[in-house]
Length: 109
Image (cartoon, rainbow, N blue to C red):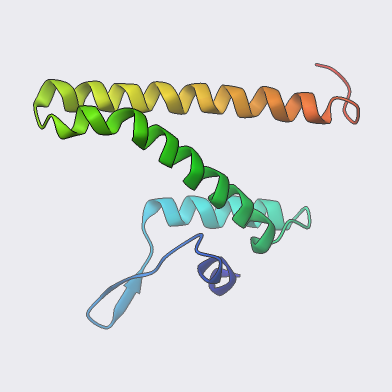
């Protein structure tokens, strides 16, 4: 399963000398993928999340790149705050759109 996650670019081993390791995000992705797998959702399906996130990150990058080009601490702080806010808004939007897309199949509440 780990090799399959690697194959779809969902996790990435980091090599130091002869040892390979995964970081904390990789661990969260692997655990989440295991939960999806219990419901029959395989790594190839999970890859669609990665593709969507890459597009979303590109959009957010366009918003904050002018701030990052300023190279001053206040602009970087503002960029960090803006990205955090955009991430929160994105989470909210995904949740409501998913709920709306499934409302004919799940009870309200």
